[in-house]
Image (cartoon, rainbow, N blue to C red; front, side):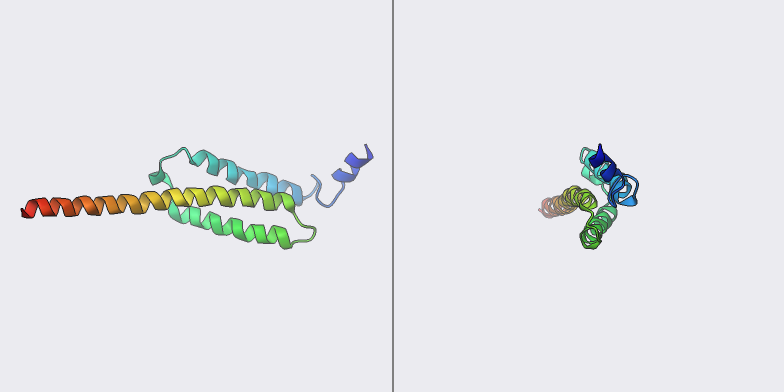
Length: 114
């Protein structure tokens, strides 16, 4: 019982923003994981890149702040990996699809010239 009371009153316990901040940020991770089922053309490349930068900055903050906030670090590390996966899906779709369209255009031009 004493250990529970000590945790509740600790600087990282549930009475502080060091606890509720990371808990709220897990929403980004859950949302990103749910977006992996969406088609790649529905992904915003700009927003995904911004979320990657945001998570990198917050990971550094969580590591440098005293006391270290390991829960926030884990949350943003998970978000970084999800957003990097989404960004790779978007880049693959964007550039592979564009190259395919260019190749089809050249094939049509060659056929029309002959």
